[in-house]
Amino acid sequence: GNSVTQMEGPVTLSEEAFLTINCTYTATGYPSLFWYVQYPGEGLQLLLKATKADDKGSNKGFEATYRKETTSFHLEKGSVQVSDSAVYFCALRDYGGSQGNLIFGKGTKLSVKP
Amino acid sequence: DARVTQTPRHKVTEMGQEVTMRCQPILGHNTVFWYRQTMMQGLELLAYFRNRAPLDDSGMPKDRFSAEMPDATLATLKIQPSEPRDSAVYFCASGLALKTSDVAPNYGYTFGSGTRLTVV
Image (spheres, chains in turn cyan, yellow):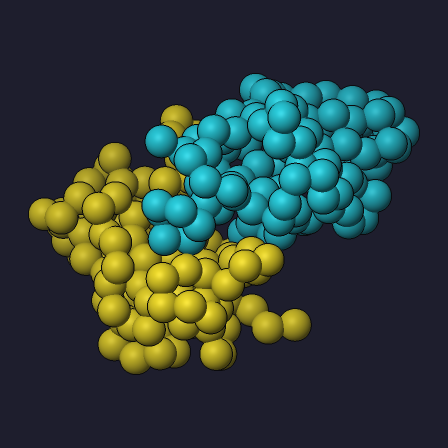
């Protein structure tokens, strides 16, 4: 079945450090891939997406590249800020068998210290 | 910006009581999802609707949970009777499907801010 695996957190970084949150997936079809962010006390917000192999999604300094050969969609940011502290969810949508439902990873909590 | 509105934001109730959570999807969206978030299980899909019809509610405990869309502007999730293990944050999300079988390509979903339910 379809699934998403994220690195376990929490991840604690100092401001301006480089961030990588790993995400790998298993899918039967050709999924679209997403990163969502959840700030404390809020719902999930779409951060970025990629719909086919080698696509790069980017937003607010975050990037992730759809790697079909390694079935990965790792999230990166070159210089994190305290305001980036949140929980990050990797997700996929497979158009094959799941009627377009999103499948989420468990989430990775990021804490950025000043 | 268009928003998905959920009410109430917080609810504390006693075990055995009925709880109703409401969601107003974004105008024009035809797909509505209910998710539950807990520390142990993460995000779990409970049910979802397309054009107000339930497509999948296999994630819901059928004996106590029910989900409905009385009209296109309102989705409800009801728990009766509530139990302490139902304590969680419940999220509604909406999206637009251009095909009858799927949410539109390239679209994510828009989530509401959630209802934090505590059953004591």
